Length: 230
Length: 48
Length: 224
Image 1 (cartoon, rainbow over the protein chains, first blue to last red):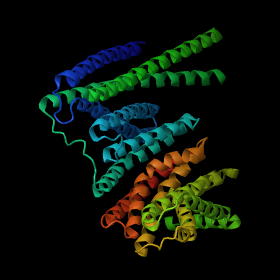
Image 2 (cartoon, chains in turn green, red, yellow; image 1 turned 135 degrees about the horizontal axis):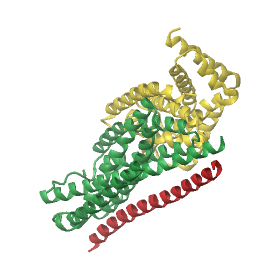
Image 3 (cartoon, rainbow over the protein chains, first blue to last red; image 1 turned 180 degrees about the vertical axis):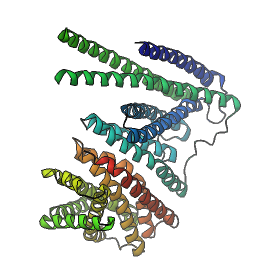
Image 4 (cartoon, rainbow over the protein chains, first blue to last red; image 1 turned 45 degrees about the vertical axis):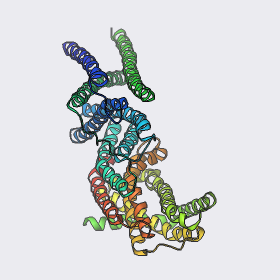
């Protein structure tokens, strides 16, 4: 019981600090940071867009590490981390893929370009959706964890190859519209950016904690069920 | 003015999605917690 | 027995079971011929535009035919629990992977040998300028495809929804292969002046990475 109360305390603290930092970051991004000269106010999408992209990438890195750890140790905990992180990563990547076109439309006058970052993000999104599908398609817990871990490793290994392949493809075609990091950030913008990055990292931790707890309850129920029928 | 609309659109989508996700987690957890309690009750009544 | 001899005997087993029915090979060939014909109906372009589209058509057709081939590759072993029999053999499990990959590669090469000349006939395109490069990229691209594909076929054959799951797993993973292969194929048509060598290198790197990783991970797939 003490274990439980302690985790719920940590969860509460984490929830409130996430809430506060998100508000501070929102203020910094929407009010405090100066308006960008050429792009105008739309550039303010940048702060949370890039923050989501970073968090998504980090989440997939966690999947990769946890998958390796699972195959080496065979502890169910690592599997839970890999799974929940993949789901949250897909969630943040979805945000990236929605906000990206909204930003691109008024600036480049097109919803989508085959920019390397965009395209790699899209492929990542598909890869980790597939990762989730593997888990749905297997009944036994141990096998589910094992096969998903194997795919989690493969999926992450393809990311750098993707990125370089698409980058060279684009630079060879004329009219690549823009490289999205061509913006030199003013210090005030920098502050807003790091605030939103920090806020979303906290949000990731909070979501991870909640989801891990849910998976633990599921595991407990499964255990009870097995106990009942045996 | 038009550009502000895009900004508004992007931010509202982000936060709607995030709150939706958190709400879904909460619902899921509540449901599972209930199920767990139920199981425990059944097992207790069986063993006693 | 050395690793190579084990692979050879496994491969021999594959070839003999295919020769018995020839069902896989004939199905794949008929299927890719159908795809060629469908593309012939759907796309009607003059010669200049055709050169830009044809590499894509070739690789889409090969992807479809390859998926067909992969779907059978491990599910066929599940009849009568043959896969367990294979796993009981005194050999490294990665030998199974290597033999299956080579077998799938052989099948695809035969299919390509039959259908790709037909592409040039049906679309009335004069054929690649650099035939050597064209053949190299076909082989290399198909190898990369099959190296990943065979592994994923083994993975998805262990699931409940294997056949529909496999393409969803496979296609995102082979996007760099398709991208590079299409570009190099265009290069062999004499369309892109530079960059083809870079993409050949990507194919090689991809081929190496996705030969080593599956070999390392294959043991984890076939645990009981």
